[in-house]
Length: 140
Image (cartoon, rainbow, N blue to C red):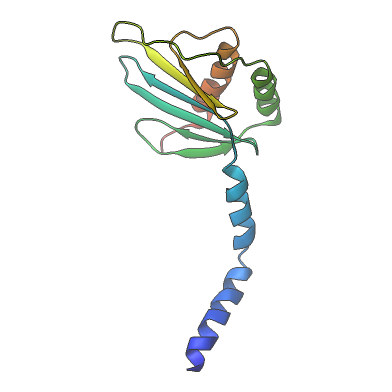
C-alpha cells in the first residue's frame, strides 16, 4: 500500500528538478503562429512549409527529410517583421493552365491566400521565408 502512495510522490519530485514545466511553457508559446508559407508544385515536386512563430522561432519542413526547428537572428526577425507590416494579402489567384507552376500560400493574421505570381508586397516576405528554409533546413 505504501508503494502506491510513495511512488507518485517520488516521480513528481524527480520530474520537478528536470525543468519540465518550463519546457512545457516554451512549447505552448511556440504554438502561436505569426506567418506560414507553403510552396507546392513545379517539376521538382516542391512541398515546403515554413512556419514562423511569435517567439522568432521557425519550423521548417520539406516533402522529404526531417522537420527542423530553429530560431531566427535578431536581424532576420526585424527584417521579416518589416516586410510583414507592408504585406497586402489580397485574393487568391486562379490556377494557371499548364503543369509547371509553383503555388505559394501565405497564412497571416488568420487569412490564407494562394498565388502563382508573386506581387510586390509578397516577394520580400516569400524571399525571407525561403531564405530561412535554405539556411536552416538541412537533412541529417
